[in-house]
Length: 130
Figure 1 (cartoon, rainbow, N blue to C red):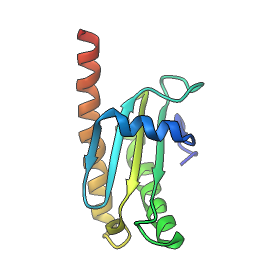
Figure 2 (cartoon, rainbow, N blue to C red):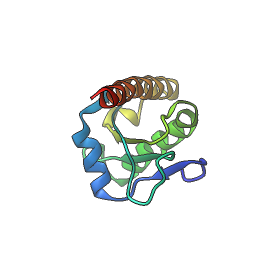
Figure 3 (cartoon, rainbow, N blue to C red):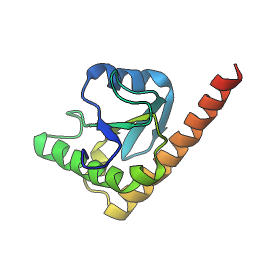
Figure 4 (cartoon, helix red, strand yellow):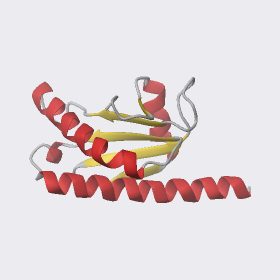
């Protein structure tokens, strides 16, 4: 994913925890997307940050890597067109992702990013009004 211009990979646990605490998320049977406006320290505000994780509930290392690889490719296709600049996205894989047809993975990923973006825009608008 590092090959997408303007995209920063999340590496710090604190960034993943910040996304978990934001309250903006999209949940489906394949994955969970958490998002917030803001970025890591030292990252320009115009950049988009993204992190992918898969817990041991997904399966052994082979299955976790496969799940993360599928998410990485789906996000590589969708984030450049759909992401909000300054947004941080965390995607947590679920076990069903491994066997799901690719078309469904792409569809759910796009649906999730659009939903989260709508919530991020609403939050940013409310923050400006306050």
